[in-house]
Length: 447
Image (tube, rainbow, N blue to C red; front, side, top):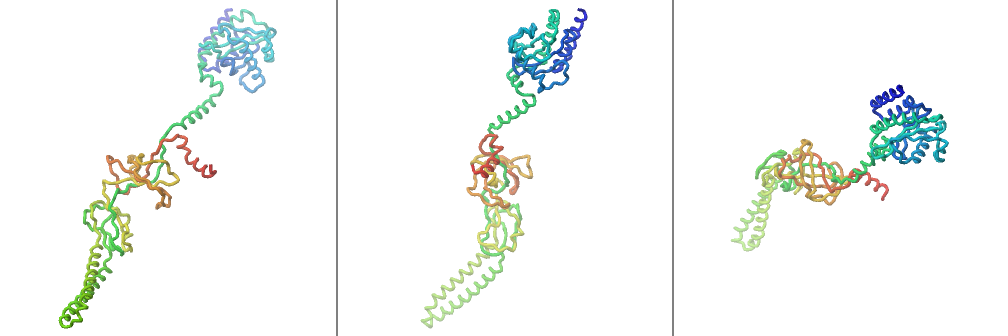
């Protein structure tokens, strides 16, 4: 008796050092023999009478849930739990094969032994969370049952400490292994995230352009002789911008002046002759009309000579791409050569490709990230979008979108390049991520 007591105390001491449930199950099925002799021992975890998980079998170091013996154990334990659905957790249950109900006998494990002593482990809600049993052919004595109750109570406390509480999520864990639980949790979270409403956005190339600039055009057909100003140069009202080639104009002016002088000479001669010859008076009106015509030609060529030196009627900054490409180039009347912009009056010009077009409206937010300063975005609001798409310089079919800039921000340099983020209406995250694939599929299949 003293040896048994010492063994019980030693086992209880060892139980305190067990940190995992599988280690406890292995300890139960292999160390209980020092207290009560048996031929076979099984420990398991469960929830109620379902989801039985055999954790250890005496004499077996590695379990195989698909083995015939373990499947028989699961069937027997299920029948045992159904036979005793509300057991007294403080007492063990002794089952004899000869006296067992028919359902239990039908599921009796081969070579288990005729006499079984079983103990169910419960939680604070009196729910069965596991159990253990020992079996042998010899009858189990009353003294052995008392020792079994003593040590199984210690097992029950340790089992409760190492078992997770059986809640709603505890039930779910019996359906899935830990790996499946993680996978399904991720899937459920991702599905839930797909319904979150997020602002739809798109990124497109953009630049800073002047707002309502003064357009400097060619005043006449001809050739540009010289560009006086440089790009981004500040000019004042009346400053010379560029000059036209004057050679043809000077020749025309000189020719008109000579023709005017000839017409005046003829007119004066006719006037003097009219005093003596009456028939000469009829030519005076014709010659006077010719003089007026030639004078108009002289005035016109003088005006063209003045217009050939193009000046700016406003003050501002010159917006010009490449001055050298204009020099010596034939131009037509009204052709745009440069712009005079107001440095404080700028806006954002965005070229949105047709393939990336989203639903937006005037007043929607725009963020411009300049290549020269990507950390400080420029905020604006859409004021205009072209009705039809056009081909850009990079040969992309795109819509022109104009956005105003918040006047409280620092103004960027005209001509600065970057990318703009257009923020449209709110849509589901699923539509935000799969808009392009859906568009491609619909265009491909036609549904």
